Length: 177
Image (cartoon, rainbow, N blue to C red; front, side, top):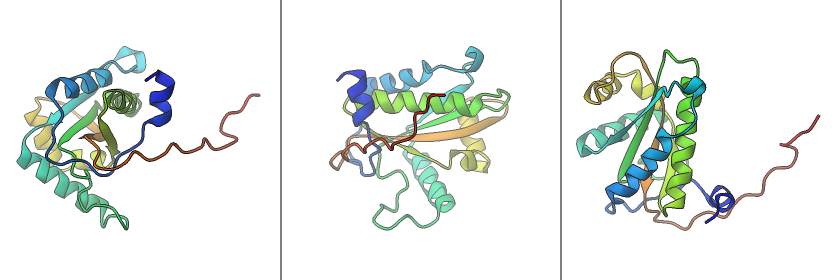
């Protein structure tokens, strides 16, 4: 695929094949794309944590569901849509570009996942999670000291649904003055 095709056809997936984990080298390639995202003043303020521990994944899913509240009609009760891989993007709170840096990492990872034939979905509520005891535990287990902001999770795996068709770009979003 060309870059334009990747951008045009990437979609958030909300149903994953739960028991089919992508090979480590593909996940590592997705993470590398996130690490290479541009950052403000090249501070590289974001960090990416792969959550492999199934018990910890379960606790994150439960807490995220509590923060989210009841899922929208027709959505799975698992806020990670059964994705076998959970990547967490956090950013150093001392950087004034922390959320932007982490957001660019998330965007790069979603595009790379699509290029590699993987499905992904940005899952919110990482900010709220990092403010809880579980969030502090995750940071400690990852060896991250100081204040960190949760930017987002990336649910990653193989789609268990058809990719939605691209939406038309809404008129009027590009202006020239």
